[in-house]
Length: 618
Image: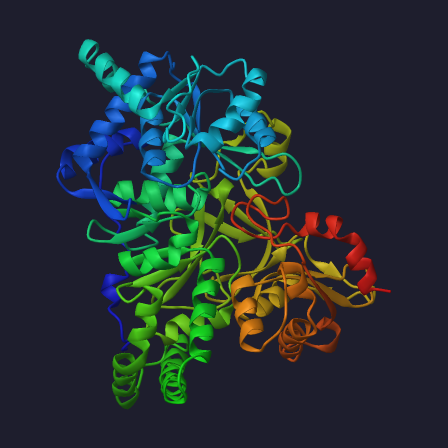
């Protein structure tokens, strides 16, 4: 069967790539074996700087010895409050090498959250990115009696600042060099003392239903899972990957940092979250993992660019994507692509589709990986029509990342695939809840034994809170969160995520929350895509003075109504949306309505905008 791409380049590997039964053991073995090879790349002042494994090892050794010099004891916790960058990785591995526990804090968290996370985790050393993050730490340090030192990555703006508790990362490395000279084996002894069963990292949940909970993962679970990833997703030392999602989230920590540490794939760090589209084109990753929000943004960018193209270019795209869609139809049915269609597809790629891939930055990608939230099946089909397979994975913080995954040979849009080889997945026969069991499942929640007992039953099954179905091939599909299923006043069970995914397929909608539990009909709160809606307004001479006025303009209201009308036609009458309200505040990751991964918090949105919701039912 011809898939028009090389399946051998996508099939996962099963052999052990790098020995070691703890994360630091694997790292130091990798440094020894891969010494002069490049592992990390980061853009600084417009120039890409490369770090070889030897250079990373030297930096980690200095930071590790620096921690020992300031009195960081074995089994203590260090937290990292920073955006995703090389320094995050260096400090994370140094903490683990010092036989410590590493914890990440989202850089968008407020000072009060920094206090809670540092206090709950027992943080004794706090790494912060810059003066902005330092201000948060200084504001709450009097409430953190266990805190010994605050280490700052970037000292710009702090040259005249002096505080006995605060030290720069460069100064810590200098202390490390002095300590190394006096105690050359001290860090190596700490590495040797790390046991597989020891707690390695804390990953705090987003706290959408109360205070964040610290999920505990041991070294043996991390190593087991990262080796398991290599049976799920193909990656090796020749691959170029992007590192841009928050490293304190399980997705980037496992699928980015630790998986690349294990396989040797190069990690390229973006300059900042706003430069992701530009950096993708520069890096041209060969394997690209992202959340649906990113894939939606790329698609909407192409759609907006297409509207500005000439009639000839629009016609060429329509023909080419039509050919790609016919190829995708055959592939999704498991059928061979006819020879004549293969030739048409090669022409379509040469003339149009390869340029679309270059516009996005995925022209070298062997495959794409999506996860962390549901994605529209139509979006998966679109990327497949471009000639790039998109593989959906599913998992959660408590499962150490991916637990199921779509195989390249059998792509099913809307499905999360069968269980990964390294864990068991099944449905609860009474509730339909997805349950997971395996060595990848977390140790429990820090300081919360009751919550742990609620989540992991006596037989070791993790109750995920996701409701799903499974087909005859063993492929699972998420239907919704147990707490999110809507039961209308008429008794109809409705899955809001299906409607929300259809709405988010529009380039003008970033996110949506469907409402209707115990109500007579469905309504929706929508967050518009600011860039694309502003472009629409400018192109159509729609006056607006700010974000709020943009959402209230009749033309934008009608634009969103048209999207809703198109979506409603795909659903039964009882499942159709009757009214909508546009969020009139431009939200960022710092706002409480959004999770750090930029998803609307359903319950909080419903509580905060209760008045607007009630207005839709009057």
